[in-house]
Image (cartoon, rainbow, N blue to C red):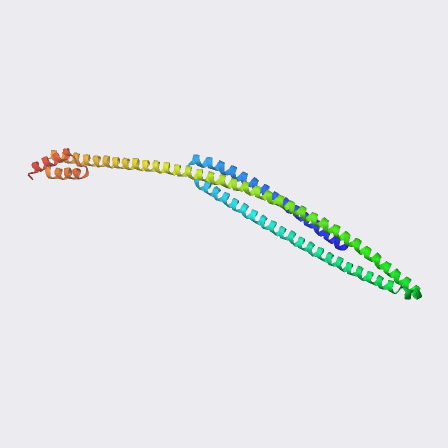
Length: 299
């Protein structure tokens, strides 16, 4: 009786732990789903802001994508851990079934022992029948032995009732094991369905990531084109400014040369004209150089 109570208590503890495990798994999935929805919403908002900014938000988007991948990895690890827990529970159920099989074997052995005892009792009864003539003289002894046989029969009946009760307990345990197997099958189906949902979400994340990557590449190409155009315009402006500076410098030297030519200092004027020609060559300056040479008597 105490053994049955202990087994019932173990069964209740197992059922309670199984229920708590299911609730804990459901809570983990609910928290993970909520966290994923929040992360998706924040990632989309940050993406729109980053596309408008075209700058610093690109780094933040890459961080968000890595965070999503890490979250998916954690969810995958959680699912693997849950699968391992289910495998352990299934092993425990199989061990209990093995234990039940051992109990059933023990009960069969006890039944065989009872059959043997019953055969022995019948043999004794046969022997008592053969000795009936001699037992007539031993009435008191025979009555006592007959009472002992009845007591043994009563004991055997009690044992048979106990075996029947144990059989009922075994049947109930077998029904409980089947119910647990059915519950585990339902949990496994639920985990598979959630795994499919996670796989779909992961595919959606990959599609979004590819779209984001394509947009980023387009923005980079556009920015590179704009940068190249800006560099070309800046280079053209620098060249234009440089030409203007050279022209101004050459014009200043030409004016100095003209002043020197007016003072008939043709050699010094020629030097100024040649410097101006080196800075900004032109036909006009070349003509001035030739005139200054002739005036200085160099030709």
